[in-house]
Amino acid sequence: MPSGQYDFVVVANRLPVDRVGTAEDGSPQYETSPGGLVTALAPVMTAHRGAWVGWPGAPGEAGEPFDSEGMHLVPVELSHEDVEDYYEGMSNGTLWPLFHDVIVAPEYHRSWWDAYERVNQRFADAAAAQAAQGATVWVQDYQLLLVPARLRALRPDLKIGFFNHIPFPGYEIFSQLPWRSQVVEGVLGADLVGFQRRGDAANFLRACRRLGDASTKGGTISVAGGRTVRAGAFPISIDSRGFEELASAPEVMARAEQIRKELGDPDTVLLGVDRLDYTKGIRHRLTCFSELLADGRLGTESAVLVQVASPSRERVRAYSDLRDEVELTVGRINGDHGTVGFQPVHYLHQSFPREEMAALYLAADVMLVTALRDGMNLVAKEYVAARHDSDGVLVLSEFAGAADELTQAVLINPHDIAGTKAAVLRAVQMPRDERRRRMRALRRRVVEHDVERWAAGFLDALAGHADQPDAG
Ligand code: GDG
Image (spheres, rainbow, N blue to C red):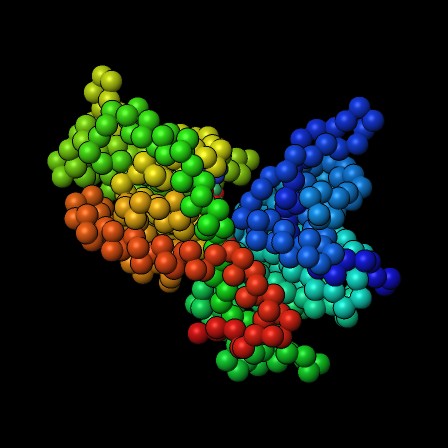
C-alpha cells in the first residue's frame, strides 16, 4: 500500500473539531472542540508532521481532509446506520457497559459487530493512507479496538500504539463478549498497549493468555510469528498549569464568590460534575445527600449540592432511563427538604464553558466523585488543579483510576452508602489544617504529572526509549 506524508498520526473516534453545518457551496463547516487529548497532542503534532483521523461528530458526508492549527485533519465518514450500530450500538451499548463491569447489561447484536468491524476497517484504511513510511500511529480508545491489527496488516512498517481510556474488565466479565478473541487480536496489532491502571493492564494480560495465541512475561506479550507487544499503565492527566491559570483569573475568582452568594451563602457547597452516565454513581451520591438531610446530620439550608450533569448519549436507552430516574430523585429531595426560596439540590442538565466549570470548582467546599467504575476521572484532577488556594476536600471513589494517584483524597466505596455518608460528613467537618495538608499533597501530584508528561511517557515507551512500562 502506498504511504502518506505524516510522521505522527492520531486515530480517535472523534476529530478535535465538530461539524456544525454546511456552507453554501456544499462543503462541511467545522468548529474546534478543544479537549484534553488535543491539548496534550497539539505540540507533538506541530513538532512533527501530524495528522488526526476521526469522525467529525455528525452523520453523512465527511468532506475532504483540511489543515487546522498546525494539524492535518482527516474526517472519516459515518452514515446514520454506522452511527446507530457502530457508535451507539457496539461502542456504547455493548463495550462501554461490558468494560465498566456490567453496571447495566451489555447487549450483543451481530449486526452491531458487523458495523464495528466495517467502521474500524475504514479508520485503519484512512490512517494507512496518511502515515509516512515508518511513521508512529497512536490509536485511541474502545471504539477502535480492531484498528491496530488491521493497520498492521496494511502497513507492517508502522510503529503502532494503542491507549484504552476506559477500564479493562476482569476475564470473567470480558469473556461474555462473543467476539472476545477478535478484540484481543485486534489490540495485539499494536507494539505498545497503554491502560489507565496497573489492574487494567493485568486484566488485559490475562485475557491475552486465555484467548490469544500468546504467552506473557511481566508486561511483555509474545504473539504468534515472533512479534512482541508490551502492555502497561500510563495514567492520563490534564493540562494542570492551564487549569490552575484559568482558575486564577480574576473574573473566574469573582464568579466563584458570586456563585456562593446566588446559592444563598450556605455553610457548605458540595459539587458533582459528570457526563450524565450510569458509571458515575450519581444516584448513589443523591441517596447519600438525601439521607444526610433526612437524618439531620446535614442541616437544611446550611448545605447545598450542585450537580452538573452534562447531556450525553441521549439516544441510548440506558441514558434516557437514567436521566428520568435522576430527575425524579432530585425532584423528591427538593420537594422533601426545600422551602420557598431554598432548594438543597441545584441540578443542571447543561454543558458549561470551562470558565464556569473552574468557578464552580473554586466555589465548592467538597467535590464528590462517586463513580462505580471509571478509567481515570479527569474531574477529580481538575478540581485539585483549580484549588490554588489549597482548600477544598475531594471525596473520591476507589473505583476511579484517579484513586491510585490521589491517595490523599477521602477515598470511598460508593456502594457502601453508610460509609460514603460518614466520609461526606468527615469532608464537610474537616479542620482547615487537614484540608490544606491533603490538598497540597494532591496538588503536587497533579501539577507534576500532567497530560504532557502522560503523552511523552507513552510516546517514549513506544519509541523504545523508556524502560519497561509499569505492568503491575
Ligand atoms: C473518559 C473516561 C477518563 C463535563 N461536563 C462539562 C465539561 N466536562 C468535562 C470535564 C472533564 C471531562 O468533561 C470528563 O472527563 P472524565 O475523565 O471525568 O470522564 P469521561 O468523559 O467519562 O472520560 C474517563 C477520560 O476518558 C480520559 O481518559 O478519565 O475515565 O471515562 O474534563 O471537565 N466540560 C465543560 N462543560 C461541561 O458542562 N466545559
